[in-house]
Image 1 (spheres, rainbow, N blue to C red):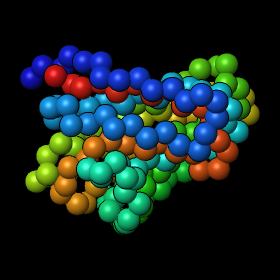
Image 2: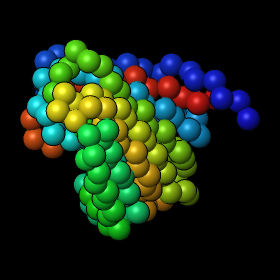
Image 3: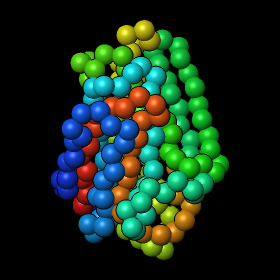
Length: 172
């Protein structure tokens, strides 16, 4: 199996916004990789979440995300886990640090979004630095429990608006 990454698109917001939607699937790949760079304008504790886009480009906000499980770990002993058996998002996918200049990032891998006869699966991980707690990371898995074509992804902030810089690759 080949594992070359093929650049498909990069999208950045102009200033802080609540979310970014990318119609990035449907390019003939079975697997896609989404990379979110650490960005500015987000407050500490402002988690990010994700939703898939349906074939018409609208965010799917029905309770179609099953077995969405994620864990937030921090070097400073912060430890939290979530499990949703029927949720309207993948969350959290990313936690914000309190110093934008210290870097960090997020990677999500999405499987089968172009296949109308299969569920779409995702797994993700992220890392940031929080001055009060040290390094923090989120790791998660989930699937979209409706066999349909998924055209893209929406990444959004829970509360405070933020800047987004997202790059999408096909895995070929």
